[in-house]
Length: 206
Image 1 (cartoon, rainbow, N blue to C red):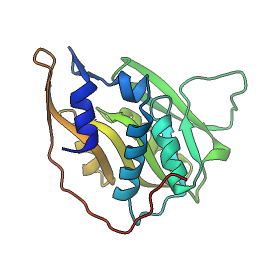
Image 2: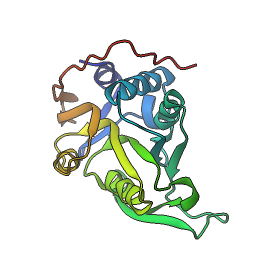
Image 3: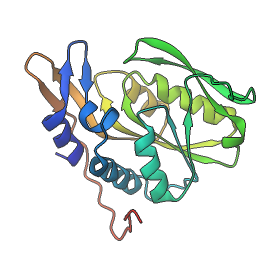
Image 4: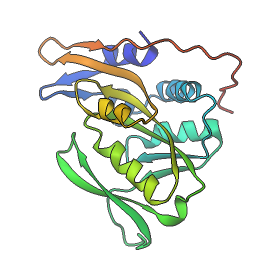
């Protein structure tokens, strides 16, 4: 069992309707040590993959993306879900349905922040049906850029997102994959993942 699975068992709360709440350390209150460990692990898993930009979607993926961007020393871009007074009309736009909020969102990135020379590592906190991931892939492709891979903190393995992305040939690395969870007994079963060992990497946050 890895550090994230242990943290989920310790502090996660299962709600009726296949909802896993990790507000205490991931997407409301942020445990910096957990974020740091996730950044280290994503950098380790994508060892040897060329990356010059990190992409996520607001809001919960931003903390992970920022620490990972620091490790890679590359810019971090996040797709916005809402227009503001200073939003540009010159943007890439895609649609994503939020499993958590039960609504369709238009997400966008201003064109100057994503271009055809980018090799983009997408990261996010959750993967369920894959709507957000596919929207981010769409935005990358609209810019003519390349998806270097997708890093997910928690994948709901009983839903279709992960299997669809892997079938499409996307390099997907999920730190914890939930196979089953029961809100009445508060029990979780994780998918076993092969241990990957890569030596001699300097992954310290400076």
